[in-house]
Image 1: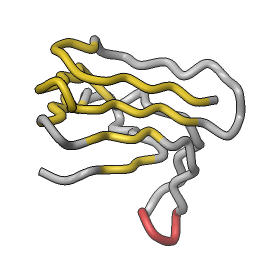
Image 2: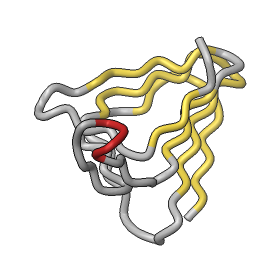
Image 3: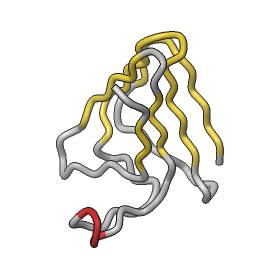
Image 4: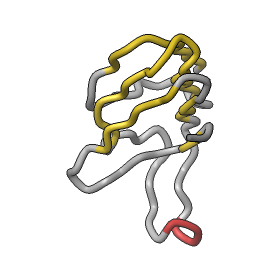
Length: 88
């Protein structure tokens, strides 16, 4: 129920499905997870734990941005209607 920004999503095998509700956004910003703050190291732009993404309305937004021009692989599908923005 809020706008969310993540640098990596690593789950160790279980995919995390995400629904983005109308008027909210999920930003994949490509930063490293820092061990001191998160208990583990996850490299930037690692979304191997992200499952299906559902856009739940015309103004639901998936924003993918990365400082390093690189291939970002999403494990799941993107369904529904909304806005997808990619900046690399």
